[in-house]
Length: 375
Image 1 (tube, rainbow, N blue to C red):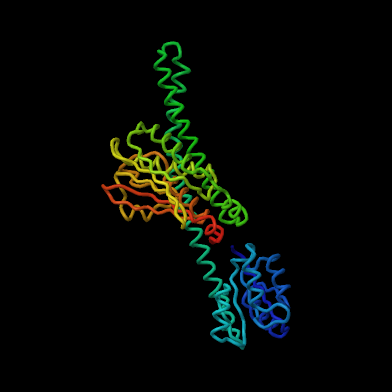
Image 2: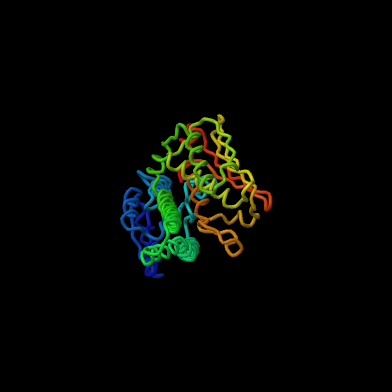
């Protein structure tokens, strides 16, 4: 954000507020003031300053309580915060840092020290913002490169055969029509899955900022998980014409996740396993429950991935796009990983080139899940 930076000063000494106001205004900052913590928190929410300077020892609501209140509110949680104190003892400083203070300014301080501390914090905040923007730009670039290609492949099939059917209807044999219809239906299904994946991905990213909805999602349960895993895994194997390559080792169990998401995970992971392994090699799907939680493991004997490829399983990363023209964004695996994390679990990939890949998803038991960290 360009323009004049806004700084909020919270201190119950009018003399100190005046000094800070004078120094910072002279250096080109807009300064707003609050005489105590309560008013400071209200002002911070309303004005969204770029930085907050706050005294520790104040009546009613001291600096620590003020800081804690600001860090709890998503609207003010990220605002850089400097604690000002005449007692800069190590224990107090550590406590402040644990609450999320960005810096300490011991009193008394000179105008130069004040200005230097403010500049350093604003510069740091700017760097963090730029790094986040760079990540977003990278993501946008890779989406904009991968997505048109991904959507275009199935669309080409649909359009080409659709036009043939409408212009050549009179001369086509029934079996040709059936074959074209099959290609159109298959391409349509692929397109549909891509669109669904994007919707789920967008939903999951939004959940990252909505703790209430994330918590509600974690309450969902799939009671007969083994039945869903079996049905979906067989469907996928059938689509690949590889039912005889599928090995199921499923224990009955409860998975702390909504049914539709369990189904989506099985489709993605089993689909990948068949996609990257040859006909005639086994794909094993295991579901097991222990006191610690439950596991879903999908193991193939396919081409495997290198350590470098594994480290890049971010959104929209295609493995060896140039070498193997493959369907489906690297999005499927990312969605599965995010789904696992949102539900307090984790996804791990073990892979060795030429040997195969095992993807494991672990969910904690329902008791453990309720205590899991918010996003």
